[in-house]
Image (cartoon, rainbow, N blue to C red; front, side):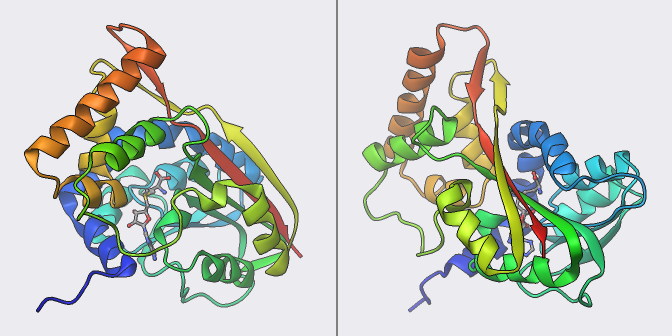
Length: 274
Ligand SMILES: C[S@@+](CC[C@H](N)C(=O)[O-])C[C@H]1O[C@@H](n2cnc3c(N)ncnc32)[C@H](O)[C@@H]1O
């Protein structure tokens, strides 16, 4: 009998897959890239800032920090992601590691960024605590998380379609909610309980410009850990119904094309280390 998958194992395996990592970097991250300047300014990065970019992925936030003159260390547990990050930001130092268990001394950094990493760690509170430990007092933490389906978002189209048309036996192992930390009501108390003050949040109108109304389905299928793990095992009939439902949503909400601006908004949350 095979062991049931855990959330931690699923995340590690999916992001280690070079095809998923490359597809995320090539297509999905076009929306994440729009959030980079907001993360960089939320941590007040400038020349000489010593910054740690957790869950750095292919290095988009790292490169944004480098562009304003920061000295950056990027950390991720996916070798496939780190390979891309090294070529995106050759001036940065990169370390393979776990964001929940940092191998840095206390008070080494002025800034910690986490671009779309919070939903992927089994224990996001531990990451907040680790970020605080490695920050100097007065240092800043900022993280981005996709908005949930309560707003108009491609994420809602895809996960709504999975709920309606997905095979009932295909489910994710229990883990943190994908959009939990976009909600200030959840994020702010965690920050304040872990040595941060002055929490703030900003919504960013990130989106994809696509020429195929089914592209949001393809992006989640090919370029995400959680979405991919739910979509890839679907029988053909279910996958086709999910994609058709996504296409219908894009056409209904965003017109007949031939180009669609599909929203994928995000929240950037930041706070200051006490
Ligand atoms: C959605 S990607 C974000 C990439 C990039 N930061 C961005 O803003 O587009 C999430 C990244 O988190 C990494 N990751 C997930 N869990 C992690 C953990 N526990 N420790 C380190 N990296 C982790 C994955 O390998 C992946 O590169």
